[in-house]
Image (cartoon, rainbow, N blue to C red; front, side, top):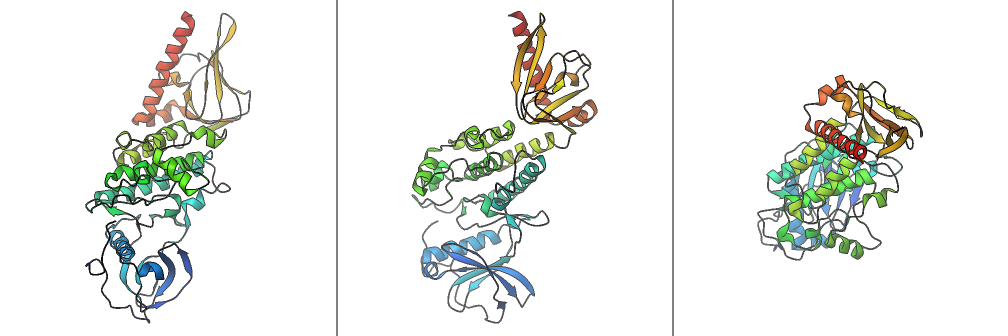
Length: 408
């Protein structure tokens, strides 16, 4: 943000709000710059959230300018997933404030707490992904208005009791048309992009928010931010280098969706040019995943259970939702292991194309849950490129492996 002086027109002119209009309520939260209170607007007979500058910040012109910018930027984003701003003014004691829609519920950070959330639970995972998709919608809209958020993180996403989703705290957002202040490092370690951590403000664009959204997805799937450290300086150094911790090391053996991790890691590329070019591209990948893996019958198998048997009739395919399996076949009377598969991989897909018997036996290596794709249910998905592509790729790979093994 560019530094402002007290004479700039962006500052709200004197004209304190009436003492009689608002009735004080409870403190909702506070940061270094401002505090947010629940207030009763007696004039309009409704509860609102009032964000008021704190004493030290209220005395600094640059902080006031940033505060007023936050109010005006947020007010300009008329979107269902951005809280609306009602009023902007000055309190009787000279501190700037703005009132906005009172958002109640829990933060995404609260919903993702370890004791509440398990990414291996499909219902919880899809709920979190739906929240993230709505966040993408709000951020995409902001980008269309020339605004980047710059501080997307779980605690800045609110989820209401009836499914409402709001992207909060546009305090360090910036208009792309505004001049950049070199060297300013603003954001949250664990979710900020390398260019943001290096203070390369002039390099920030839509892909900066794409990175943060990828970090949110990583947090949902893995259970931790992409990088974290015991001190802010150490965390900032990791952010500058774009050091993303390997998901497998953080998840400690927990099953994870490989496809979702691929999406997250592309968004978390160190080089902005290698990330998704827009939030809409990222959102499209998430929507495709949710559609392609949605609501098929599921079956559970214990360790050692045979899921399909070589030579049996084939009428469906299976998508591994949790656990691991081993595929093998008989070659000259001896068992030959073809491959081991985990979460997100498809097997038995040859049944999609013909009625030939199973060509391999698949056994659960551990407790495993699979989604079952019957011919009829899969027919509904054929128009979705992600499922069809997965099936075709898997079939070709499997045939190639079988041919090469038999030739050996």
